[in-house]
Image 1 (tube, rainbow, N blue to C red):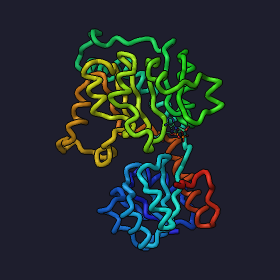
Image 2 (image 1 turned 120 degrees about the vertical axis):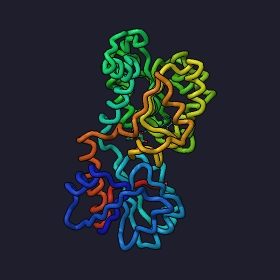
Image 3 (image 1 turned 60 degrees about the horizontal axis):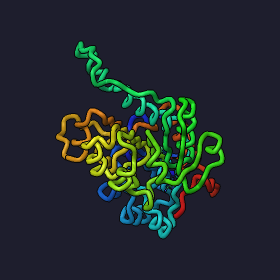
Image 4 (image 1 turned 180 degrees about the horizontal axis):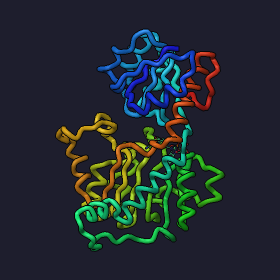
Length: 329
Ligand code: NAD
């Protein structure tokens, strides 16, 4: 199998090469796959994509013309692929569904701990020889109510950690998970918005979850609620959450994902002007912490992603691709 790998960073090369079987030949491209870069795809059987590649119908039609038979995602989410178009072009899409749920769940907890105890502000103060505490006060996580939206593999791992903190964990998921019932209680989504001190999003971005957090749902939340999103940016209406922050309805916001992150995250843009005014406004709040889609970024997760991506590609070439790892419409 000849595979064109898009959006490649040095760590992708290192881990993918380490897990690459002899039967697979990898060619690495730094840019993301999109309508501008798809002409780079020539004489390959598969493309390997990541979260911000934009695999639209046009891209898929061009991939099909170039002979591509497989889109191997090296991530869990697949909201950036036009699955209907892939089906029409007989291109199979596969992903890495559960590469390291604890890695992402632990990052969500890191955002909670940082926001609550103002670690990001304390770090800067101490470097400035400023040891004053005014403004750094936190609250005890123990005993608080934590709402988990989506109790798949990451949501479940997150719920388990928060149970360990001594929180009351409630959740909403249209597909209830037996394992979660040992940790907490399922409630209707409305009740989750109303009761939670901390809300963490762990559901996929699909049409019904687009802007799940919006002006109406924010109004239903507790005053000063802490919102955490390590799932996909489109789950939150960013402009609505900014309005919520301005009136202190939203007390804390921790984001690892942002709805307009494509073209921004994963790149060093420190010499450029930030042109996204909504994102720029977010960065002005002292009670907002943004990380650039790094929740997945652990040694264990990178190794698992590379191993399963290579297994998927090899299995596809032998007609034995696992159903769980295959994404269908
Ligand atoms: P998963 O498929 O195991 O779980 C998703 C859960 O969401 C399922 O239980 C599903 O029933 C539930 N769900 C579906 N629709 C829902 C709705 N309307 N409301 C509430 N729940 C709903 O997925 P996962 O592995 O736990 O990953 C969750 C998300 O995390 C992924 O979709 C991906 O977008 C994101 N993710 C982010 C990173 C990162 O680095 N930031 C890394 C991996 C995954």
